Image (cartoon, rainbow, N blue to C red; front, side):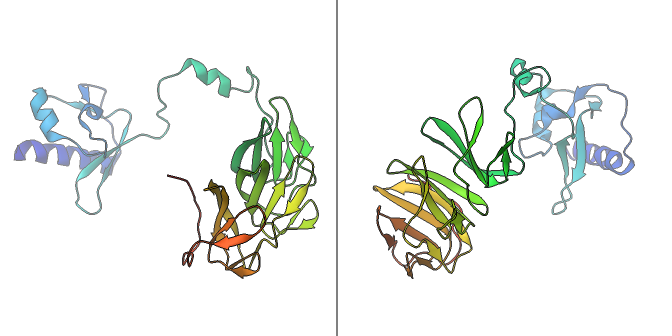
Length: 249
């Protein structure tokens, strides 16, 4: 066992140092690699195989902590072709015209896909940081918002957007706003002393907003707050740093 271990380690380290790959012979080493990338010597021994190990399609490196050889799949080694991959090829299949920047959040509202992020064009349409896709074309949501949208949710029949923005549809909203299908509205005075709202969810019939702020609706609220449809409330004493994700479990 010690001899086999030594042989493998020396062979792998020599390959890693020289970058020379022998002819494709024998069984591929990936047959004997664990999910964590370690070479399973017990699996080699149990297989009864003796002979060269093919290194095609792998990168070899050394664990900086233990010195043990590790196996990574080589860059560019794609999985087997799938018939559905044709839908990724814009030259031969329909595609959705994209955004001029980054998408940060998505939700479905009024039968349309709504995308928020940092962009000003969606499929050729002027759309400031938020846009809706109906399956055929993009639409703006009014004049949009004046900075990045990080979170979207549906609450009380309205689309809620949270982010770094201060204005929505030209109205001061302070990082969070409501879209009713025709116009933007503030939600109280929004969040002050704030970097932004980064996460939204609905819990116990209230909208929960998380982010990096110290006040919601003018009252102290540390990085997380609840909206009941008319006023902001606190969730205990809040948290002591930014909230980036929320879910209900």
